[in-house]
Image 1: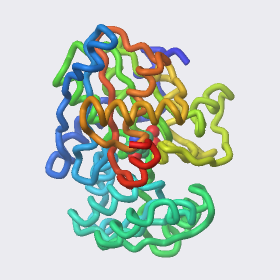
Image 2: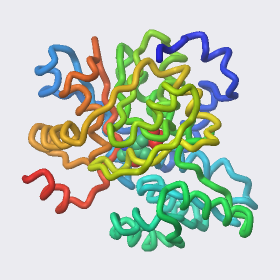
Image 3: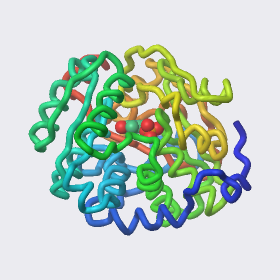
Amino acid sequence: MKAESHSICSHTIDLNLLHIYEAKKRISPLVRHTPLVKSDPLSTLFDHDVFLKLEFLQDPGAFKVRGATNKILSLSPTDRKRGVVTFSTGNHGLCTCWVAKKTDTPAVVCVSKRVAKLSPKRIEFMRALGAEVVVSGDTQDEAGEMAKELVATRGLTLIHPFDDPFVIAGQGTIGLELLEDEPSISSVLVPLSGGGLISGIALAMKSASPSIKVIGVSIENAPVMYESIKAGHPIEMKEVDSIAESLLGGIGLDNRYTFEMVRDLVDEIVLVSEKEIENALSFTLENHHWLLEGAGVAGIAALLSNKASGTGKTAIILSGSNCEARSLLKQLQI
Ligand SMILES: *Cc1c(COP(=O)(O)O)cnc(C)c1O
């Protein structure tokens, strides 16, 4: 899974650094340039500078607002008036609804029965933002089928959670901010599920310097990208639960962008266990006093478990904080 640095130029996918700069300009009215702060506890523990990128400080609580904003603001006026539809394990749906409200765009969200049961507060919140919530199917993929049906029948535009060039370019703006705030970063740890976040960040950072190491962190309970790359093509896996629910879900058998981008641009993917995510949540709460969601601390989990060793200046993307606080604290026995 070594990255070929030259693959940025020869890549078959028509997505480059300029698209990320365009995204940066487009999304700036709605999206925060989040702080990059040095973590003293982690820097002391690992004897090199560890920086944390506080993406959970975006208004809707996660970085996904970047991709959603870039996609929605790129639509034609007619398409925007018809509205957008998405399917999501949570944050993408939430962020899409938030952006839709800010931009007066009608929004429909398709969620699986499982997600509806797991996250009733999120559903409530999306409805409160004015979105129409459609509960359909048992899995993420089945919710996706319903979304595609609405594209066909109602002329809505699908806002994909990760496999869309505008979404990837939007998430890539995080890479630009990292380079701006700490140009000497030598490795970055990125939570990885569908791969939109890491594809955008890798494209931005490898374009600046191919020697910057980009490491993906997935969960043992949903190593779909990891196994797909091992297999040489996108595969499907059975869904199981995780404390890092935002990292659940597949990459799609019909994956068009993120599989190739992760294969070509990402240096390494490591897998963390449920226990390691729990430890990272407790560590972050006790040392930084932030209660994040499981997915948000995947990078910290990888470092604390010595599964990833950032060398030199290391940045960790803290991707989100949307959680049911009480039940999470109970689970952590805090
Ligand atoms: C979606 C999400 C991720 C993973 O992003 P992908 O683009 O699917 O790889 C990580 N953390 C949080 C909080 C998320 O919501």
